[in-house]
Image (cartoon, rainbow, N blue to C red; front, side):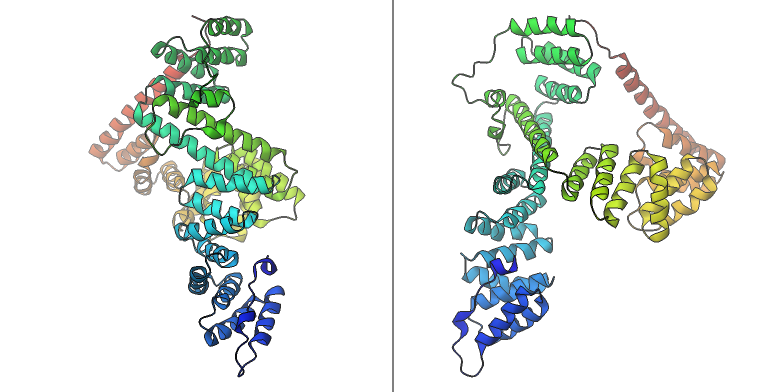
Length: 492
């Protein structure tokens, strides 16, 4: 890549006192041979002798960038990019240095210019996509990833970028729909489709039926109910629902470019922009369109030949969806076909732990704890496993070491509080349990904290904690009973 973007410095050959051409040649050779620090020193001397030569500033900036001296590279690259607005190397290197420094908002403009100057350069589109994602400009980021995919359909990073961007756009559309009307039939329909996609048939049926109560006579919802019945193994009931759907008028899309018609016609890329105010119906179809685009991109990613890059990206996607077991399997496959990566193996260990595949996770966690005891993750995870096995004496030192270090999982203090309570150390238990109350979804932490307070003789605090437990427990039981009452029943 260096040779492809290196600028020439022929214009500097005007001084009789030095031989700038020879110096420039030495610098070019150093760049070609990846002796970037040496090249940077030569270009620095040349730039000092010829301060009005922007090509030298560009080459100096690139040499510094490739030497991982991005902070120093910014000034000469900014000068070169200003003087040479049509220079791909100057714009690209400036954007690359800013990105590596985490200055993504500043990187967007030079990276965008570099893609306009050289639309076929894959790295420029990739860096632009990453920078736009970092500043949460997901529609623009998706365009950058599509451009990279069009240049190279086998590029796994392009497909993964499109998945991430479209999933973010789904979340944005759903959040706007929630703010507009959280109880609208369109919100219920979208949630129903989510439940249907994950085979949660009773709750999907409930959501679709509720949507029909609020917006009767919608053909697409009856078709969705039929899909629920088919998934639940009730083909006869599905036929009844299909007949209901067929008795209703279909959406007339002959001359329409509505959000619904674009979705039904498979034109997902024409989903409504989320930048303005949209009605509930458009937000619903936008969310479904972006979800379909994400699904398409995942299929394209999955169809690529296996490689470490592809499998690592697949693991990241599964992990973001909390499909930890599938993510761990992708990591394992990447390790099998690659030369091995310590970081990838660490990722697999954590994913196996999150997937509750304890027997596979434990030896890896123990190994990484021995080799890197200062990393709070390993102590926290091992402590959690030991606490789960009621080996509290061994769990406590691990958990104490974890919470004393930065980067410890938020659950480590909770595990530590519970372990101290089991060891009848209420003072220590109360300290850590009270710090973990934000994690309490079912009242169990408040209940344990009440126990600790009772043992300490702190009766008023114990009563307050117990009251909070009872309120949370009652809410949890109501939700559980409501969920348990859902069932697949015959068409109404």
